[in-house]
Amino acid sequence: MMPTATVLLVFGRGVVADDGGGYRLTDESAARTGTAVAYVRAHAAAFRRDPAARVVFTGGYPHGPAGEPGPPAGFREGELMRALAHDAGLDAYVRSDAETRSRTTLQNLAHTVQDGLLDPAEFTVDRPLGLVSHPWHLPRVRLLAGRVLGLSGPTLRDVPVTGPDPVPARRERAARVACRLGYLGLRTPEALLRRERGLTRAARLLGGGRGFAARRPG
Image (cartoon, rainbow, N blue to C red; front, side):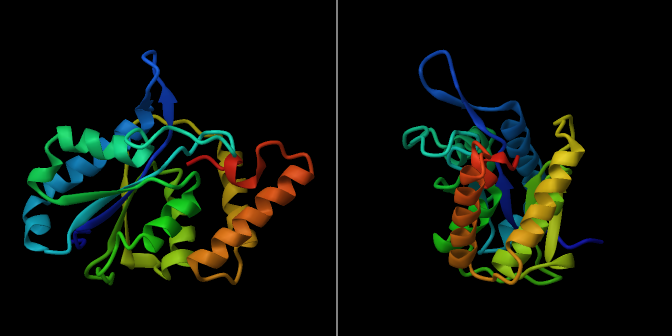
């Protein structure tokens, strides 16, 4: 039997403006939230036994143009996912937190570490870190988790979302290659974030429009 991941990182898939002047989750972000809640319910006993168990929802304004301030506090992606999970009864099983500064998958991971949202948990083969996202996204999440957290293989547990979320395969493969080459040799959140900023600036100077970071779906 595969060990249960009692610490989950949930990666969002965007927020959009609603008709009332506020913001709401995309259907894909809501699906990822629902998958996390379902996983916790299915392993409720394990979550309740582990005092370090938690679910961390990550995301600020991932699909917003670079430079835009994004939604105000209370309407960032991580907060909206956490609120949706609360309404679904997650708090009966486990505590939750929200990382709300990030716009990219790398930032999801790096800011989660910088904000101490995984402390003091340690991850092993018997106590893996759970990654909640769509199947096409998880290979890139694993790649970046290796850079940011130094985790790989069975120390990471995929918790995939079922249901459609079409992303062009070629674009996602290109994103993984860019991550693999662009972050080669870097092992700290700070160094990785500096490199991402540099790559984004370079992409804009070369006429890349929204830049390296913004073009990567997540």
